[in-house]
Image (tube, rainbow, N blue to C red; front, side, top):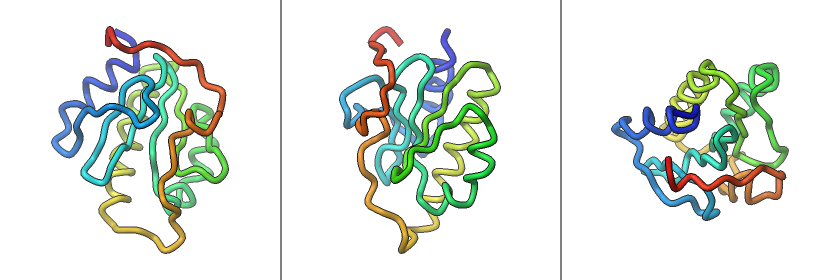
Length: 131
């Protein structure tokens, strides 16, 4: 079982989340009632939608992790899953994302645009139909 499939299986059991077709049409996605929150674009690269406020609040920690890339102007961060601890990090960040959505929009938040994969960030695309 890949790290991505392990993370997706765990997220599928969360009561506030449901599997969905990603808006970009690639890989697999998970949504909350507020919309898409996680896109699995490959077996290692995952985009996670945070609010602008959450990114600002945790920017230093996100940058220091080494596994996360922040794309300027995007509410999506990209997590590179290379170890089991990265799955735990993803699950923690999904929890943060859900909490951020519950607090309501920040006036500084932009409308959520497409995930980082849609922004041409150069990710490897992998067929997840067997996941």
